[in-house]
Length: 385
Image (cartoon, rainbow, N blue to C red; front, side):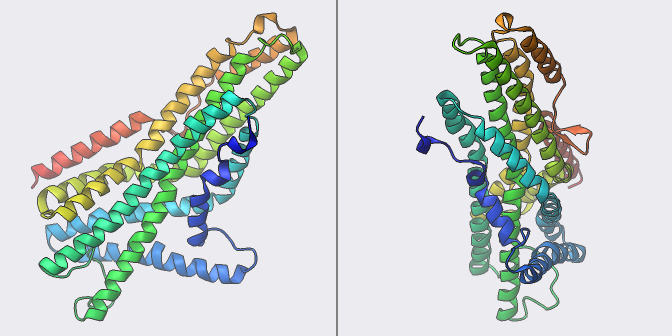
């Protein structure tokens, strides 16, 4: 296979993530460390502290049911977004280590059919998650601004969300523009933070699914080429065992990276989905807001679904490895090969789950539980309408 036909590597796949992490001050600049510290402090004070705090204080000051629900639709996701953001930040060393292991697995792909599978299935599936979030973030940003402009020209000018400011944003045009710009830029910053936090786990799991599948294909091919000696077949099996352990280490490291963020997301997801639906049913009355909250609701679902979906597929591929091992021509191999195969089979029989908090499995059952929880909250709230 020609070199230029190789699919993008890990660096290219996660280029957007590292660009945003650098832009938000999470990655240290080696040439300007002091300036970077000042920049990081400023960015975090403005967008990771002041923005959610002004929403929470604003929530306490709301008197009407509509304003309370409107503020909750952004205050709860904003707090969770900051928790996920700081969780990724404190695990950046593990992120780099995980990508190094991905590079090693990437280098193990050496056959044309494996390259084709990786290029046409594994990489597109991973990037599809990112492209969906592009649509969500861009759609929310545009419809949010359009709904504010529509309400301003048609009825009265109001902020994107009720919040606390040390001045009256409605007392003057300058005050309103300042408050609106703060909310708009803060909203955009949190959309970018959510983009990288919510897509990273799903994209990594998609790559792990692909590598687990390719490992199974390599195992199933061992022993059928008569030109390869028994010793060479045994060396290939040993390499596959090493890759098998590395995939497990990738899964465990990824669980450490996204575990706390997923835990916070799962706890809040049912509440966020229910609040958005309730507010849309009771108070939304124009097309721009319907579009905004429709995309918002889709975003709440997609913050959890891709990770749960690919985690389930990862479990399936890992379980399938046992069958792939017995698909190789092990009967014609030497005694050492068969001993190593037994070790490999015993390792594959251990259940491999992506865990959060060391206790809960990330899979589609979690996603369905979130949907059921959202329905329960929605039913309870509408009964008390």
